[in-house]
Length: 266
Image (cartoon, rainbow, N blue to C red; front, side, top):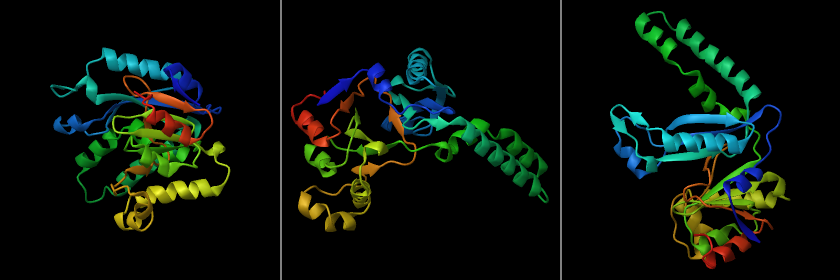
């Protein structure tokens, strides 16, 4: 059975944070139009919110996105380019703090040790300019227990989804072009499912690999990253403003494929 979830229901399905874990929700610049705004990096994170309570962090980010005007220089970033997203796995802030402090101090020491023969003012500016929060969130992969693997399917075609049959999927978030599938490690009963998942992801990163494996039997044309297994802690859309979320109660993707064929996801 497939159920469409409210934000509150979705939040209750997420991995529970351990003692030092926090959910992290972010406001992110994302969309084709972002590359046309001078000084704005695509996928740039503008704000982050963290809490033991996912719903609290999500609602805070949503309220700020709706009520705050974001500017870069004299340019206002359009609301439709500001997405509320979250890291699919909770982050261990205690472990993160150890990693950050050691990395931050080492980077400062390296600058000082290499000062000889360099412009002191330039080094001084580098020492003063480093943002410890940027350092922290660049190290998150080292402070995350991987409960959830996110699979990005850049198509809504049932035939493409069917390539992943046999891999247990618990949650689905609908995107503009396709779906994000959430595979919980605790649902995977044997390594064969992992091997299949990563071999499919690899096939869509290389056309020769694809044509010699999937393409010859599926009839699906190759497209780079049509199916992509995301990294350690991918950013996912918080299910609001058109990003519908679904639960597959039986963890069987075939149920969702039938649901899609029935036109129920819109």
